[in-house]
Image 1 (cartoon, rainbow, N blue to C red):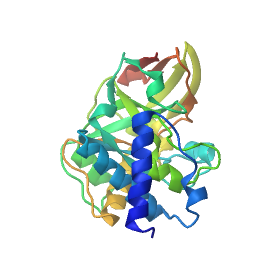
Image 2: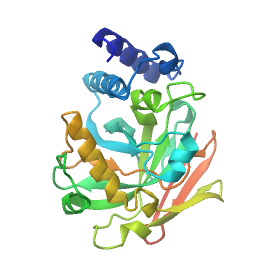
Image 3: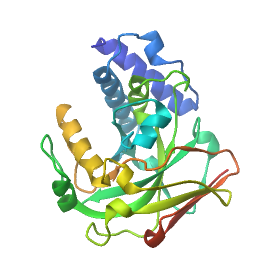
Image 4: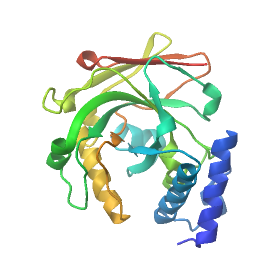
Length: 261
């Protein structure tokens, strides 16, 4: 494990990068022995810094739960980060492009919890029982660390690349639809660039939430009532540029759109 002063210094560096909208050199190049546990320790300190500055925890994101995302990133295990209140955007909004670095979009489902979930033995059935509703979401990826050569340690430290999320479409109860077969068409400027089905997330998107509850238990944490859980992308990340309009069609679950200004 890195010494606590080093962890604090890295978290402060990432806090400043978020505030100043800049990127920093690879952490793993500067701290070759840095581990996944070190990375989550950095993430916790960073989140504490943001909350102390006035942000509020509203949920968690899960990343790299699908094979297509693991292939796209070269990272072979899931990760997670926090969602703060200023990261939640309504469908139809104009999004400030310069708020983020290396801007990419992912297609996901968000689970909103009616009950808490506590690992380590959480199952898919526990997740379905605890879910108030599921709603379509887009994740906006944001990297405060240079992209070339990143490892999962760099990504986790950087809040698992969580920038923001766009919520929209039609909320559904878990027994209204077969969540495995929820599909989406992701378009940029009226051209379909990605498509996928939610079963790409560990066979069922609720499995991602179960993984998260069990992983959090290893760090002495749990999921609370009302939290929004982004269950993981079932498409590859789509790059966007200033001026792009993004539209995701989830069929019977409705649509989400936003524009980057």
